[in-house]
Image 1 (tube, rainbow, N blue to C red):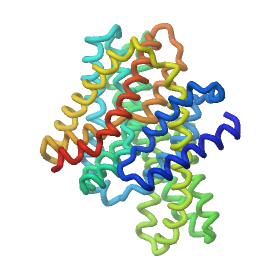
Image 2 (cartoon, rainbow, N blue to C red; image 1 turned 180 degrees about the vertical axis):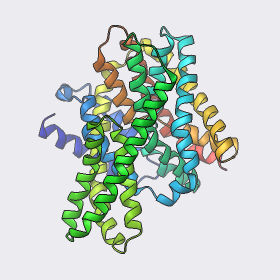
Image 3 (cartoon, one colour; image 1 turned 135 degrees about the vertical axis):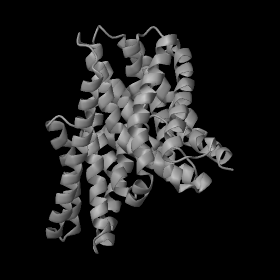
Length: 389
């Protein structure tokens, strides 16, 4: 993309975010996505292109870091058992069950179906967390949804990568090897993030100027990600852990207000700018993969996806934090799809492996993501009020 194109996309994002200031419960990312779809029919925007590497290495570290940094540590500790269980056990159960159901109604085998399920498992609550808080006043549900999203981004990549390796090679699937790799990649990423976050929280004391402290936070966000990826573990979880670690460390320090004021001002601008560009570009790109043949399958898979998420969420919370079915229904409905799912779809598309029915998988997955963003985000207010009335 050219500089001029980026400026135009930012200008569109600015207009939409300005409207959001005047309208409550306005799902900005979804609006940007729909505008992007409309822009795809204008020849000027044919030059717009986004790759999986661009999303993964440029957009995700910053978006994940700001979410983790702003996420209240006390909320995570309060709901840690539920959040971690949903992002690990719940994620694996969802992929297995949804993958099996997809294999029954589609031309895919179980492993290919499980790959589609893995694509549709990570959640992206960027447009619904604030809506839940405003519509219901229930911060606990918003906290669980947001915390789960930060963690399941990392675990979904591990699961997706494992399934792709099984599907494209002649090696069989080993449960013990899978869980060994899963724990190594996940826990390793968390460890790298904690160490990097802790070190930066100490180093920053030598940088008394606000601008230098912000520079250090940028180094942390992308540095933790790059270090983890370089040694073969989860960069996503490293970035999340580093953000939460530095937030925790500065929660104990006297300079917390000074540091948070500087960080919030910078990272909120970065977050809005990246979200504007990302969802507009996703909308432009998604039109290439949309076809009428995929809509019936996508609609059925969307319904199954919501049902399976409700079942796994209900089963997990029954053990970790017993709640009503309404609570679980809202947590399930709030798990809409977004940037991580798009990254996984583009990664699958880039594989171009003839052993996979990738064209069908990509087309249907993109359509389900589109349905999820439109239906779930626009209905979030009414569903929230209905479930917790």
